[in-house]
Length: 294
Ligand SMILES: [Zn+2]
Image (tube, rainbow, N blue to C red):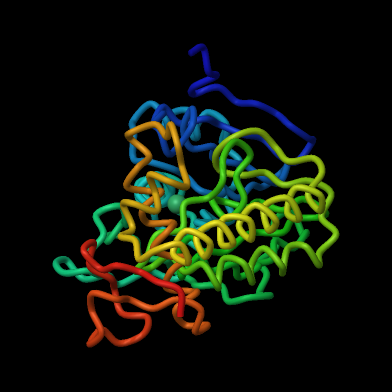
């Protein structure tokens, strides 16, 4: 595919994009880093630590002052370039909280950047100024527990919370479906003009798009309830029935998403585990657990 890697894409007077060369089944063509501001800039989601991407970001910055390097969350395709970019620009790393995951056991997850160390964490509603104009954190947990979107004027930088090409992966233990749905609902109540996601094209009909995403998840939930209502099922069985013809590379992510729905439904008292009566509600499931309607 002829994607515009390492090229500056000026989208608006104060919004530009640089695509990193890390295409995959999860990142689409790659991670999109954004530069906002004109005389001074902030870099949102600096991306993976790839020399050609860092060079492209430096060229895009073009000697302007970098007021902040901002990360929406700490998946490895988003935050690892923050430190080298901070070292060469002197800019502070500002944004989401670091996430402490375990190195072994069910809470271990190699997709997180354990080296991320922000100079300043932003909580919901906190702002910094770029060119005198605020960039405000909008807490949107769900895809990860530390996920932030950033509002700048009437544009919202949505990271992986809302993507322009595919539905977002919500995988326990850190991913949480109830939090994700609440964070979608939070965006539904805003009146942003446009979303700039880290993966995929800009979303120019945000309200309609978010309503569609909420509807899609509610359909999936209904489908899972129907499947476990027919007979007790393991997660793999639900995935096979709910995602016919799925790209085999995406089967583990679909399993994670089904798991996220089941944990949410379990907390709401709508499903239970047949194989593991001792398991506390909300505890990380085993793949051999059989789920049934409560
Ligand atoms: Zn992510």
